[in-house]
Length: 266
Image (cartoon, rainbow, N blue to C red; front, side, top):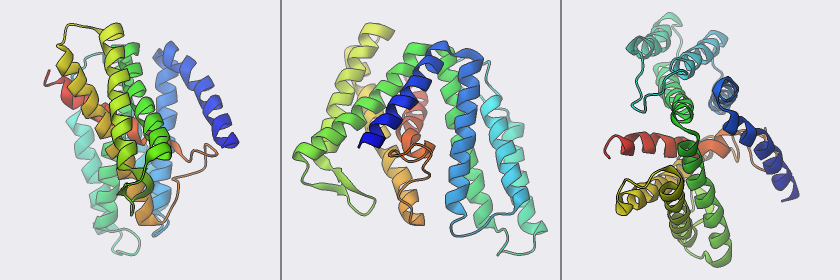
């Protein structure tokens, strides 16, 4: 627990100023985090099968294109160059023929990489986009995930008895999930109404925040399922006591994706 607290303090001491400053420093930080996240995503895949060095290099290159393409964009309606998407499919599917050996590189590997890089690339690119739109919006999204996770953990420890999905995340309970959702929604909604704007009807803000709180917990379970499949407890040990980048950002990745979906509706 002591190690976990120290790691959290160090991470917050670095990330809070970077988040507040924004601009180039924030963009570089997010880019570095995306590279580390991809490394974890590739490393866990290579537990079962080593990827060719050329494919690994292309993976980092394609992720960089996704993340850095829209760093100056301030339009909340995200857009992406279709040439990057076309390139993503081409550079990973063509080598399945060129390698001539499924033990080296197969169509399964190709679609694992296509899906993962598309998923991570858009998520981290959106993180930059949301910060360009406004600091308070990104704080709102982080606040939902932090409050949901914190209260889900505390309430689960105090009164949790009914397991949620024991085969994926043995420590999560229905009591913790419900408690985390309630507090994440309450605190997140209050922040949105008092700091961001109050033009939206209260019920819309509450529904949006609740949707994002629940979605963040699905994100946690999704990445836990990946770890269980590959027999790993954490994606890495870059943050002692917390795990890796994907262990810490699993919820916010889904929350940002969900926010971009919801904001287009309202």
